Each structure stands twice: as C-alpha cells, then as structure tokens.
Image: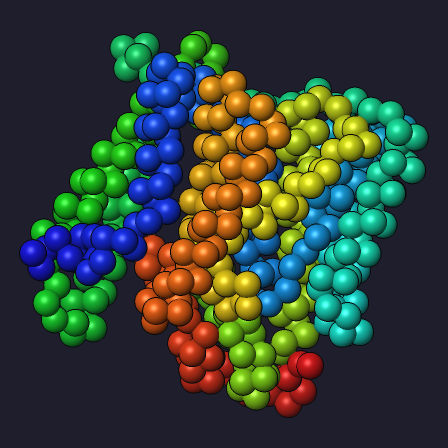
Length: 423
C-alpha cells in the first residue's frame, strides 16, 4: 500500500483533471465510432489548439500575480496582421516579418506593464483598454480585408516533423525519436528526484514506486508516439505542437525552478509580504505583462501561418478560451496558485471537448453551453475543496505552491536591496 501511495499519492482524487481528460478522450472515441483517437484527429487537435495553449501559458502567470489580461486575442490578431502587412507592403523576408511581429508583441507588453506597474492601473482595466485599442487597430490597418502571409511561415502553423531513416519502423522516425527522448528524459528526472530526496535524508522512500511511475508514464508516452507517428504519409507530430512542448518545458522551469518564478508566486500570494522581503513587485508585474503579450504575438503568428492569411477578426474571444484553460487547470481567482503543467491539462480538456463534440455533430451553440458548464463545475469543485481545507486540483496534481509557502520561502531567499520594493 505504501508503494501505491508513493506512485499515486495519498488521495486518488488528486488526478481529477487527468482522469477527466482520459475519460473525455475514451468516451468521445466510443461515441464517435472510433474517430477521436486517430492519428489525423489528434494531429489536428494539437495543431489547431496550439495557439490557445500558448496563450494559456502566459495567462496562468498573469492570473497567479492576481491580475488578468483581456487583450491577448486582440494583440494576437494585431500582430498577425502586422506580420502579413510587413511582408506584403514593406517586402520584409519571412523571417524578418516574424521577428518584427515578436518585437511588436513585446513592446505592447511593455505598454501594458507600464500602466500596471508604474501608474498603478489594474491589469483588468489596462488590458480591457488594450483589447479595444488593438481590436480597432487590426481592423484599421487591414482595411477590413484579409492579407496573405509568406508561404514559408506555413511550416510553423501547419508543418510536420520530417521523415527519414528506415521504413521498417512503420512510424515517422522523427516522431519516434521524439517519443524515445521524452521517455528517457522523464525516467532521468524521476530517478534524479528520488536520489536527491534520499541524499536529503528523507525516509520511507521506495524505488519500486519510481519504477512503476516511469513504466506507467512511459507507456502513455509510447502510445502517444505511436498515435502521432502512424498517420498517413507526410504527417507526424505537428510543428506547432513541438513549439508548444518546448514552451511548456521552458516556462515550467522558469516558474518552478528560478528565483523569478518564486517571486511570481510570492507576489500573487501576498504582495505586501513579498515587497517587505525585498521582491520588486513592480518589476514582476512589468515582466509578466510583457511576457504575456510576447506569447500572444507568437500565438497570432502560428495562427496566421496555419490559416495562410491574416484577417480582421483573428483573435476574437481567444482570451476567454485561455482564461478557461487556466481555471480548469486549478488556478485561483485570487492569485498565488496555478502551474503551467496543470493549465495544459485544462487546455487539453477544452480542446478535447471542442473536437469530440464536433465529431458527434453537436452545434456550436450547444458546444459553448457545455464548455461553460464544464468551466463552472471545475471551479466550483476546486472552491469546495479549498473550503473543506483540501488542496486545490492543481495543488494535488503538480504540487502548486500555496500562498503561505511561497511567501515564507521568498522571505528566506529573496535578496533585500535598497529600493527593491514595489507598490
């Protein structure tokens, strides 16, 4: 029993959203006559929702610091149109247009960060103004017409990993290699964590639990590798998905393994205590908002690259899907709680709902109703658990830092420097 607890935790309910995701995928697969868990559909699910999941990565950081960004959809649409116009009218090469779009996104983030960090206008109001400003801007600069983007960008939004090597594997070898690397890295991380905990003197650890966890997760990764690598010739794991995976790893490390990440949770948990411990609250606000718009710019570029053109309505209501993914992943409305990994689970739940209901022929009107109910149920379940003194969904899943934990830790680690405190 001790081994089972170390593999799954002391409470099986800690995997609520993971179980919900698996149940959705299997349920829709059966209900749709075997159309859900197919290579083609899963490739489309990842490639078609990568831009929303990228937005959610930035949004969880904004929500953790106790704010919200309503402008991300408008910023994504505006940047996508800027990329298209710079290539068509200014004759930028595709790579220069892409870089220009990312710079524009970062500058927009600096604009939002200035009003929040320096002037003190709440993020909700700042980004509400940004939503209207850049929604009007994209219609203005486009003249209400679509503009084509350079065809070289299409690989970013709709490309697949290349094929190479022997045909006897019966899989796309790039995807196969990616899957093997993922399994190896996961096994290495679990064993390294176990050894570190043993070296720290933690008792009661069982190496068998580590092996079982590696085997279980490895089996899932192997199935995912087969699913994406066994599609029709010319397809494999999508490039947008590869970009998303890279961003998830990078931002997981940033938020969970760096001083800046600890400062983000500390500010969201208790801004006054964080400031007293030497954290520059203004700096955290500014960088998080800049990062959010940068990721919105990247999401907009991936979308127009997949669509092959930028339109005046691009990005409309994207912010709501990103926010829903964050809260379904267990983030707290009051800030201080939420992780990138849990947010990806929430985003995949929403993406699976969209895909499964579409395969079953459910109309867009009913789909929106169902998604709204799922969001409400997930947040209500999380609120109930917190009222009962239990950890949140994301806290159970991935060991989120609680407000008290992050504040106490920041008091110990944050350097106290003159003038470091923010508002």
